[in-house]
Image (cartoon, rainbow, N blue to C red):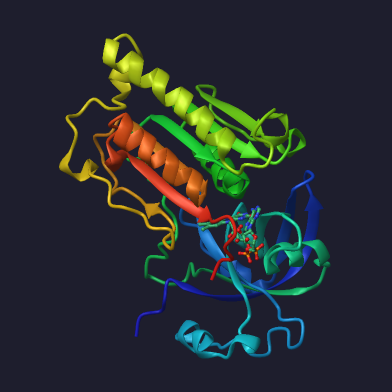
Length: 315
Ligand SMILES: Cc1cc2nc3c(=O)[nH]c(=O)nc-3n(C[C@H](O)[C@H](O)[C@H](O)COP(=O)(O)OP(=O)(O)OC[C@H]3O[C@@H](n4cnc5c(N)ncnc54)[C@H](O)[C@@H]3O)c2cc1C
């Protein structure tokens, strides 16, 4: 049987760095991580959190560990949450994850409040020794050199890695909504990509609304682009924001309240424009409607990803 593209890695907390009021970088270490893969800049992994009573005693092992994990009774099933590899140094057996500390509301955020050096942690991540594809990453601009990137704080780790890995001639804009101004981190981006931080606390009338600043900024930017496109005056014409006739595939399937939006296009070699949007699910759904339905942006050029949903625990 082929070795699965993903496996469980046994690690411990090697370092903890509070980077800002809401971002905590944890460096996981362990010899096991010398085999970890990192296949795309927005590579997602799973963090298996310890149970207070039994730690990791009941986490199943082996190729079908996930099925076995699902079959466990609630009280013995360790919580699993999705995170992004912010950086990986397999040659050193190290992997960084940037956690958003959002209070005591969820097991992952609670864990980050009490995490200690040396604490054990299990991660489900790509296995570099496997021939199977790991999947688990979506950034796929094809030939596009003009990009629109938008995310909230949960997407900042992915966006930071994406910006670092963009080619030097990339152009476009990255909008990042964060809880407060001090959460704007240092990021490296090509000169032609404008990185705009959107702290929620500086918004006068939308202080608590997750995604409101992001929606506002992306809409304003896209409206301006669409207007320039229509007049033929803007850079958008060459970037092709909406330069093709509306495709049949631009019809939007409905997203009901139970579902979390996850819609990613097939890679295209001809695309001049590519957009990647991730964050709180309702905000991303609003942006999808505006971009695709109202502005006619070809949805085969945009990845829409609900990373979490307000009021709903993952899992
Ligand atoms: C592909 C992918 C990559 C991700 N990468 C990262 C990453 O690198 N770093 C990161 O911090 N997160 C990341 N996330 C988001 C993370 O998985 C969620 O925030 C997750 O819900 C956190 O788990 P929890 O145990 O803290 O809260 P849960 O138990 O899942 O939720 C409990 C409550 O907290 C709320 N909640 C969840 N997240 C937040 C938040 N950020 N702010 C405010 N309220 C929240 C929920 O709506 C719910 O009401 C990623 C998600 C996906 C799908």
